Amino acid sequence: MICLGIESTAHTFGAGMVEGKLRQHPSNSSFRIISDAKDVYKAPPGTGIHPREASRHHIETSASVIERALVRGKVSAEDVDFIAYSAGPGLGPCLRVGAVVARTLASYYNKPLVPTNHAVGHIELGKMLCGLIDPMVLVVSGGHTALAASQDESWKIFGETLDLTLGQLLDQLGRHLGLSSPAGPEIENLARGQDHNKMIDLPYTVKGNDVSYSGLLSAAKEAFASHVPKEDVCFSVQETAFSMLTEATERALAFTEKQELLVTGGVAANQRLGEMLETMCRERGVRIGLIPREFAGDCGAQIAAAGFLFFERGFTILPHKSYVRQSWRLDQV
Amino acid sequence: MQGLFLKEQNPVLTFGAQNGAEAVVDLVTWDGAPAIRKIRAPKMYRNPKLDQSLRSRRTKQEVVILHATKRARVHCPKVLFVDPDKCEIIMEYIQGTHLKDIAKDPLYHKISKALYLELGKAIASLHKSKIVHGDLTTKNIFLKERKIQLIDFGLSFFTERIEDQADDLHLLKQALKSTNSPSTSANAFSTVMQGYEMEVGGENVRMVSAQILEIERRGRYARVD
Image (cartoon, rainbow over all chains, first blue to last red; front, side):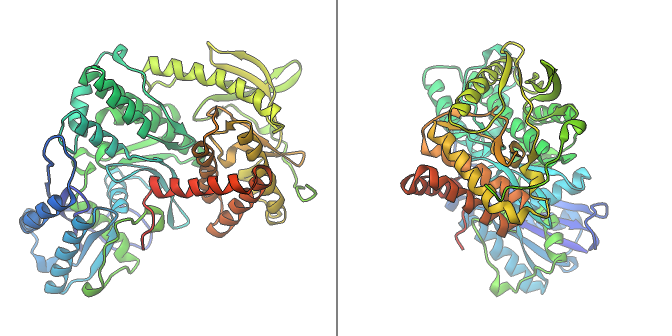
């Protein structure tokens, strides 16, 4: 069966197709990504994502992105078996674009329509690509910073940010430094190769398995205002923020005794974060799966992967009843 | 307290070195008695400068907090020896049953009410003494001789802020959720809050509860359905 997944929660409009067999028990061996296409809305430097502007971008690019996904996969729209879209969590105006596109395709081609959870998408695609069975999952993106693991057929949160997500921290710092959102990659570049002694003292806040980034952000802004070089600020923020998260992750692993860790979401593309988590996992003897860089960020393939999970469990919906939920938490799925 | 009877395990025989997230903990002999040695080993993933200062600071802090906890009449391990440079603490070994394991006991439902009331009172006593535990997961809560014992003050700090106290309770709420079914965890937590209220009074409990809701609303995607 082929699932076309449509992603539009935030800055990315994506379409991707996954082919696989429906399964009785979760096993990821029989899945493959046929194609994945996307177009990312870039906010003007020094500003964040404006939901209206992002949704306009999605409207303008949706047709060409979907066409690219179909052409690259050499699949016609008729061959698609069902259509999944990202129903949340995300920015309302952006979510609605994806929902409208998916609804339209589903009713025109008469295909089942499956609303899926965006975070489950990150997880399912990650499990598929990294070959993990029952991992502790660290989702790090603009929308999430959470440690989740499945228990009794639902997702439970074992730790999360108490305020900003890691993606928000990086984006807001980036905005302050005059970078464009998403600012993670540029901050990573600025921080790369910095001398370890350039580290400045920033608030390090771990509470149990939870982290808090708001104090760190304020302190970093102040440091920049008092003429600490941009590179040193980026370096110190990365070292501090990632150490906090690695510590929280280690605690959650110790608590749950899980033997696998999956790292997914946009910030999973950050090499320094990956390196720290790999070091920690090696010390603990835990198997780590870092999602490949190209699939770390939001993409259609993740929604197609989640689509299978939701479709298998019978979550289809009639187009006129389809919905979006801006605040759909992972542990409410 | 009559309700808090439960067969307690004797984990001395099964205790191996535990490579916790925060420190390596093992069982040693101190003055002829079993004791716990806790060493905060370096974390290779962390910047060395950040790592050393964090570990040393946390070791000293933990000792100070343990003393303050005793003064607050909350049960916790006695400190026997400290080396801040090696980030090492030797402390009394508490032989009791983890709350995590108690939750699996068939008699759990009979004692859970009394248990969570006592837990709420103990946390309230800490908070009244300006201490927050900082890591109230079910692994750090013990039952010994029918009394609640708290261990692992590695992330504790002094504070009077309602927000920090609410964080403390919010973490416990999450931990209870992860080890209980949804209905029993809600019950357990509301009983904890009843016990908490007995110690701090209605006004304080209202402020803390409001703050817990605020944390849930802020840190996570609140329901808007």
